[in-house]
Amino acid sequence: MNRSRITIGVAAALFAAAAGAAEVTYGVDVGIGHSDNIRRVPTGEESEAMLAAGAELSVLREEGRLHADVNVDLSYVHYLDDSYDGEIIGMAEADLRYLIVPGRFEWVLTESFGQGEIDPFAASTPDNRENINYFTTGPDFIVRLGSVGSLTLFGRYSATQFEEQNFDDERLLGGLDLAATLKAG
Image 1: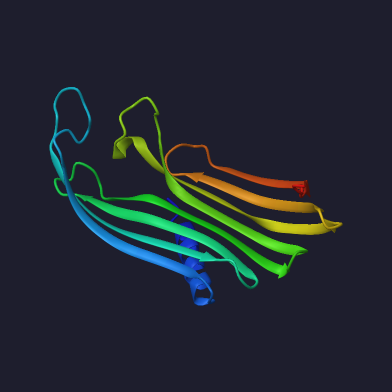
Image 2: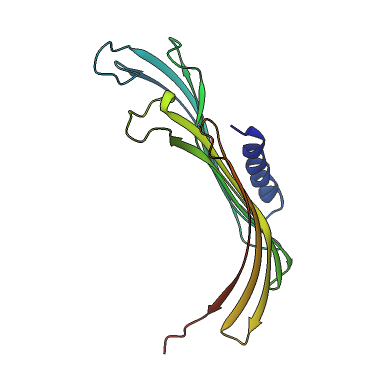
């Protein structure tokens, strides 16, 4: 897991909130759980008790030059009988847009962290779960086409990282987006 990327998303949320004019919601939770078959096997069941502590943070800011939509819902789960190592589960997403020249030139940063199953046909357990992180950033250049249209030239650098599987990926992407606003009449 790339914890530095999660840190980027949380730091971005806090920065967006501190920059003012943001809607911020947050929460914490704690819990205890028990399973009579923690490994989800047909025979040789093993009981396990778990403690969990979690935090939620949501920041929405759509004013000024910084537009941010950040959502974090992460929990740490500790397995009391050590069936598994403690783990962080949940998701963190950050969509940031900095309006360098509003309506003409913007910089985009998107970050997404979560989990996926290694084997989709096996039981969902910590042994069959891995952290996945996706990051992308790049510029948008916007040209207005009259009052109802726009042409956007964009470029992106993206990276995907998998904790276990060897599917890591980096890519560069560029493109054009032609948009028109339809008026109801």
